[in-house]
Amino acid sequence: MKELDLTKQSGGCGANTPSVSLMKFWLETGGNQEVKIIALQGVQADQVEMWAMAMQEKGVKILNKEFSEDKVIYTVYLP
Image 1 (cartoon, rainbow, N blue to C red):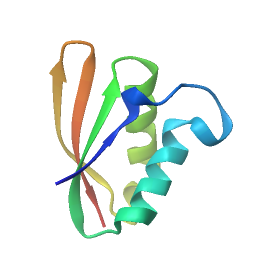
Image 2 (cartoon, helix red, strand yellow):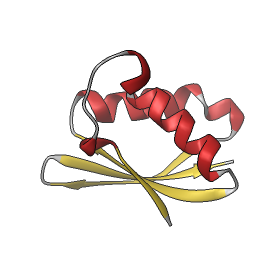
Image 3 (cartoon, rainbow, N blue to C red):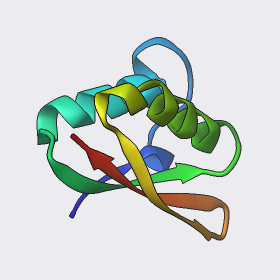
């Protein structure tokens, strides 16, 4: 399973936002698969969930959500 670890990225705006990182990751890895996305609890996790909701009509689904220390680990289906 491919993985995107947002916790290793510096926060910020523009090209470093989680939603831009998620779109790039989706384009690079392709669709029709499940991927793991690791985000810090709080703003990063909120942005992952907002992105998934915005992309829901395209077929993106959060299949699982686990909490581990200060992180949230998502299993996401990318169409």
